[in-house]
Amino acid sequence: MEFKVADKAKKFTLALIIVGVLFTAIGIFMNVGDHHFTQKFLTNGLINSFFFFGIGLGALFYLALAYATESGWYAQIKRIIEAVAGFVPYGIGAMILILGVITVMDGAHIYTWMDPEVVAHDEIIQAKSFYLDKIFFWIRTFAYLAVYGIFWMGFRKRSLEEDKVGGTDIHFKNYKKGALFLVFFAVFSSTSSWDWLMSIDVHWFSTLFGWYTFAGIWVSAMVVMVMLTLYLKKLGYLPKVNDSHIHDLGKWTFAISFLWSYLWFSQYMLIWYANIGEEVTYYIMRIENFKALYFGMFLINFAFPMLMLMSREAKRHAGILTFVGLIILIGHWLDVYIMVSAGSMGANAHIGFLEVGMAVLFAGVFIRVILMNLTKAPLTPVNHPFLDESLHHEI
Amino acid sequence: MADQVIYAMYDDDDVLKDGAKKLVAKGVKVEEVFSPFPIHGIDPIIGVEQTRLGIFAFIYGLIGLTLATIGMRYFMIVDWPMNIGGKPSFSYLENILSFIPISFEFTVLCAAHGMAITYLIANRTLPGMKAQNPDPRTTDDRFVMELRASQNKQFTAEELEALVKETGIVELEQKTI
Figure 1: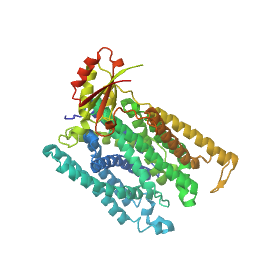
Figure 2 (figure 1 turned 30 degrees about the vertical axis):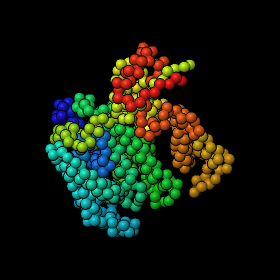
Figure 3 (figure 1 turned 135 degrees about the vertical axis):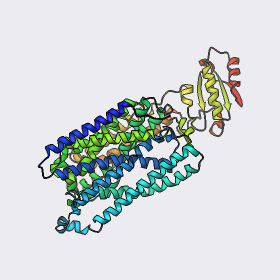
Figure 4 (figure 1 turned 90 degrees about the vertical axis):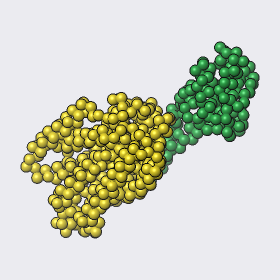
């Protein structure tokens, strides 16, 4: 079945973009003359680039996971995963742009280790200067983005080819490539989050940080895929996607929310218990400046999915899933917001027109892109070997 | 109370499923199906109620959480407060982070064990209990459908037998229980 972007959706995304631009403009206007402005603007650029790129990346990871495990049930919703993963190239562009600008500006007070003056007076950064070096940083960044981009293009190309030729050759090739992607992703998801996010708090480090960030992008990707599936089903597309597919997606959302909460808590509790000066600074800064937001964000992201998605009926209920999905999507945006801006802006960060405006602008573009991606291929894969198994999926 | 029971044996789960569909469409009530493995999609056909094990799991979990909290508060705060890592145990709430892992573990422990035991009791499969399946071959490669005369009073025993025989059975057994 061919998908056409409904006029309503076009208007909605356009409205989001216009509101986003408007709010951003108001935000810029209000901040004229503020010497923190450039830093603030770039911080928001980094937050949103990473958050939405992360959603695409989470979907790409999920696709690779399905390939590597030779899952059958997901075949009916494969194109939805691909549509979300199709944001990866745009996300790569956004990341290169924002990281490029920040690098040219010697870190723009976000990555203080890029500023030679700061480094000269900071022994801790000097000790890390082998790893936190502009050139090495860009070698790594290009490696991550190139690997993600190349794998995405390969997955998409073979997926469309499979529609034409059928057979199982492509399936087994996907199986190998999916497994290979997971190997790369296992390393790169950790190291890229150290480079892009953890190095903002340059004196601090945590070995759990990579998994924590990864769980965050995975659950964000999960809720976007759930909501997109429900949206398409509501419009009458995807007649073969049944309650059990929705139930499975709901279970994933539930489970990954727990994974995220578990990792957040593990990192927090270990640092709280050990109480070592160089480790607790990270949390002291966040608790001093963002107490309500930081713990509120954790409670929302943990308690909402736990209490609301616990029962079987709730995981099959479109209204409940969408409600929880929207709430925790905002919750995970706040997570990234605090991760980045507490390190770069400290006490100067607060959510105003600029923050909301840029997030809404990115969201508008993001939704538009994934809807456009859906139009580019049949909504149900034509020759996927597990199509029949997925059709009879029942749990 | 004496009841006439028909045990219809199949050698393929799909044949059994199709047979059950046909029988139910004709208004026959299928009491039970015995199978060596779960047959996907049989529950809605023969009208098995949705399991309530999940509700029990939730209750057992809450019991575990409560027990763990009461226990830890008594051991660590009331009875013998200790100073661990510069965090004196004067208040449960202020030290709650160190108690969360145990609360979690104990919740899971109680939920899992409670659920397993409830499951065994509900199925009457606790060790030492008499087996419920009519034929030992249903634990190997055969599938048995159980029909009761008392639940199918609109049919005579002969009619019921004739209906069952149309569904591709390999053996038929009648019993009075």
